[in-house]
Length: 152
Image (spheres, rainbow, N blue to C red):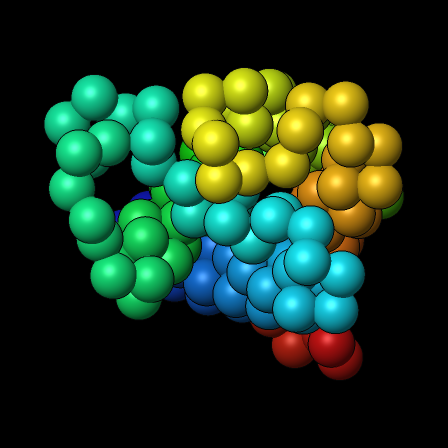
């Protein structure tokens, strides 16, 4: 296939991967927050630490949209790396899962910047947060490693 067609495939796969895995992460954390009252979904959507956004009261749907934009951007960056390095399926799964867990680890401390999110010392909230990012990584890896014509 022509080079342009490959770029379209990378873009579409990144958008689909970012949307599906981002929605799954959001739904999982929303369910956890509903069942346990741990503010992990609130943490996912939290923009209190962004100077331009911290004083604006955004509707949940806009905050979730921002989360999905970031998810798509991450999927796109990971997919470009995967294509450049020509990673095989198993390596893609390991790489994407590791990056997803690292992102979860790096973002959890933002809970310190808000009164509305879990305490940094809340181990159960941290485990649920990381479980969500594990789910995100599994789903995104599955999508990014899928080859055309393969069964899903």
